Length: 345
Image (tube, rainbow, N blue to C red; front, side):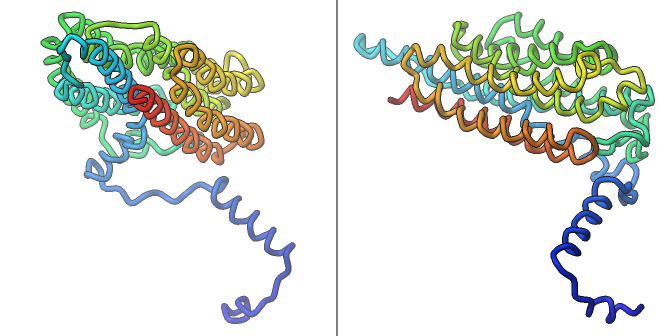
């Protein structure tokens, strides 16, 4: 049959549905052809760095800075009657915090890429995005050097924070580096990855960023940091939910593998709900924007949860992962905007 005769075929609505199903099959079931990526090229390193994951590093710092701004504004308001005023946000430690967070995220991505390749976790059964070492885009030796360079760069960027927050910043930085390695080497394989996310994408970055600006900690910022950690953990839950069959096959006992599919779906929903309900404390303090603006996030989170339950298996869950990353960033923006608005009004 010629191409012209094919083009002249008329089809009805049922045929259109069949074509859609064929497209979905080829999009999500049939393996994609190899990408044209030159070994150790700039494109290869960009793929290995996973720039889309940097939103997860940016959100905690953004929330910590917003709460720091609110705290300083409140203190300035109280001191105005004494003709005294504190400075506003300190730009340099804020910049160092975001750069350190970005470098540590890239470092974690390199470490995860290299060691999961060595353990054989990233094989042909993987449903998620392709990984640099497994695909041969980056040689193992080059990746080892990249891990060393990014770790050193993060240390260089983070070290000056000692001058703004004292030697406690040194131990926080050391802990970040150590657990960056421990996540892939051990903790993610024994169901403790979610605990690490709560600590190092919630409590540590939000509280540290806030402390560097205000030199104090409050119940509000601790609560906000926990909410932040819960929101970002939803990303890990979706990732492990997608990979649960392969993780079970290779002996990676993530929390999803340990508690099962149905419990994971419930956990995912509750993480977003609890994060939103944590804003109740801000309502008690009269911070209405901080409390209610994240309700938009909750709506998005529930919508994503319903889609996740409907899809359940396969590469289509990569779309849920992308949606979840968007939701996470929306939460950070809404919460931060609410904090700043409440500081003004």
